[in-house]
Image (tube, rainbow, N blue to C red; front, side, top):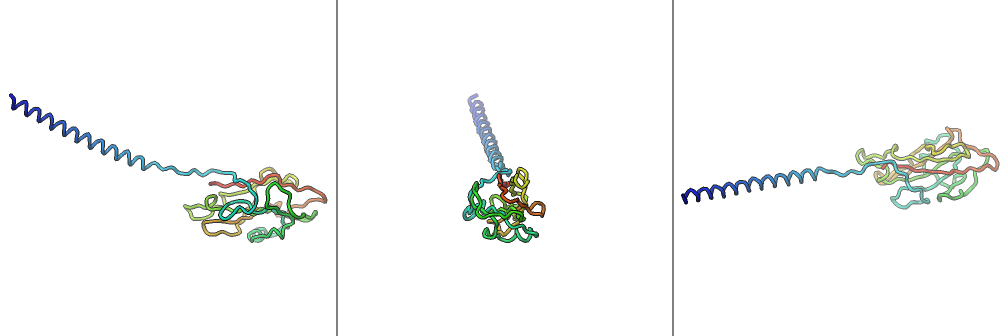
Length: 200
């Protein structure tokens, strides 16, 4: 009888050890699976349309932003003219400061265009998947009731230059459908809103 009891106890111990072994394997596999599941969770930045802060000119090295606003002599071939780096010295009027009067004077009865020089860095406009700048990801709207530019009207964009994947310079212009704008003697010409947008 003692021998049978001893064997029974040994069998129980063996069963308990085996059960503990199986539970240990189950827990280990469960932790490993949980670990794999956690590793599968990826947090991605969701792009959205964002209004860029409109600060004064010369935003600084590598910083996207505003350089100049200009009333510029009307250009018959804007695709060529505005692809070059314009000088504010050749504008009728210009400003590198927001919410300020422009320097210079636009002559009346003379055609002109609205032009903005702007810069973008890679975080705002570079497509790292396609390794290219995305024109559709950036745009600027403006409003000028004095010359019949409606609220938040899209400007046409043209690239001036870029430094590979780091930075690009742009001109945005409006030219009244190719005809240019004119003002009468003594007429005000106030651009009351400029809104730069980027999809990033």
